[in-house]
Each structure stands twice: as structure tokens, then as C-alpha cells.
Image (cartoon, rainbow, N blue to C red; front, side):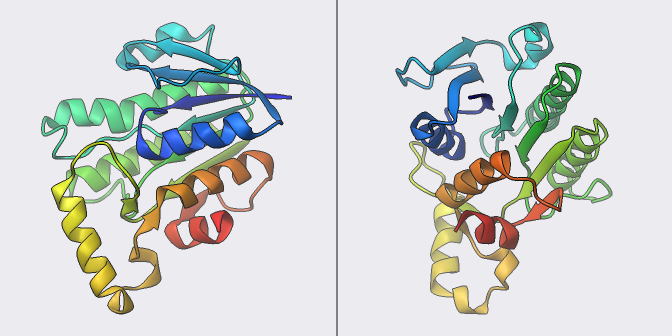
Length: 214
């Protein structure tokens, strides 16, 4: 029986992943680290409501077989670049360091299509730097997922995402496979599969995510 950690279970993909883990008999405990409650009740859940920027202070509780990092923000939600970097770079990298120190064998993190540490675009560069430093921890089974536009039923209203979704649906036949939107459900399913079965690649592109999670 396994223990899983989820960072970002209150988000779209993290929430779906949590539901899947609750139904999966091979996981007996799910530790949630978040600033707000996932509002789910189950004897399998152990919830830690914390300041995510102080994650390193919770090393003793950060122990499991697999850690899933579904943390992420957007330019619209977090226009301050310093705070954005603390979220999209700082939290995943800190989590990877804790995972390494605590002997967690599998670390799975959601990045983004276009991540590139050498990019002149701040957001792509931030994701690329995160990927670089997560990989530098050399956790035995590290998987970095690079989805394109993630779609699903969100509580929040993201106008830009709705517009992009409309165009992708209308002109999808013109869009290369790697840029096609991907369902959060597919990503969560791929993460669960990767947690159970070793995969040859560490960087999982949107096309590969779709293949694994179909």
C-alpha cells in the first residue's frame, strides 16, 4: 500500500487526481499540502494547511512513495513576477528537494509547453528553470509533464482560456498535435499511470501525455 503527496489538490488537475487516488486501492494515504482546504472528507486524506512558501518547514510530514506537484498560477492571477516565480519555480523545486532528502522515489510535476530556461519570455523561462532544477535533484523516477492548454470545468472564470478554447475547437484541424488543448482528466490519468509504471522519458510532452492517459 502506498502513500501519495499532492501539492495543488485545490486546482483543476490536482482535484481530479485526488479523486482518482481516493478510488485507487493501492494508495492507503494521501497527504495534501495547500494553503486552503480541498474540502474532501476521507480516512485516506491527511491535510496540511500551510504557507506554501514555507514548505521546507514541513519536511517531517513530507514523506511518501510518490509526490505529485500540480502547483501553478497564471499571469492574470499573479501579475507580480516575483510572486509568480515563488509559485511556479520555488514551490516545485522545494518539493523536489524535500522528496530527494526524504527518499521519495517518484516525483511528478506539471510544467508547460514552451518551457525553456533560455527563453526571453519570463513565463517560459521560469518553467524551464524549474524543470532544470527539479531534474538536478536526480530523483529516481522524475517525470515532468508539458501540457498545452489545459481545459476542464473550473470554478474560476478565465476569459483568455475561454477565447483560446473557442479558437482551438473551431480551427483544431489547423493546429499541430502538440499544441492541441488537453483535458485535465487526461493529465491526471497520465500522472497516476506514471506513478505506478516506469517510463523511459523524463520530459513528457503534451502528445505523450495524451497517449499515456487516454
